[in-house]
Image (cartoon, rainbow, N blue to C red):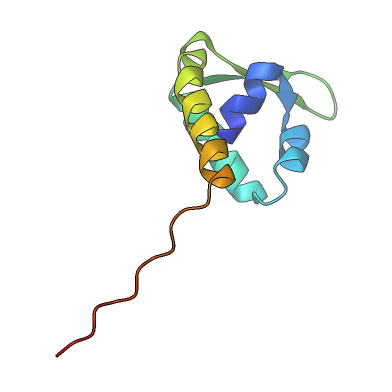
Amino acid sequence: MPILWRLNQRTWRYNELHRDLPRVSHKMLTQQLRELEEAGLLSRTVHPVIPPHVDYAITTLGKTALPAIEALREWGILYRTTSPPAPSPPAPRS
């Protein structure tokens, strides 16, 4: 979801995504990008220059996931701004 959310705003290069997602390892980011590409949710464009230049962009199919991502994002913001009730202690055993 964080990758698709970013790609909705513009086309990104790999290193830009990695810098913007600092807690994601190179291995995990590469794996997620490949899976999203295989699912048709993003496109990968390789420019034949040295060093290689690769762009990632959201596809039309990927854009269909954005309303669900937005709904989860709004729910997360609401959840963080309200304090959940404290868990009740376990009942004593007899």
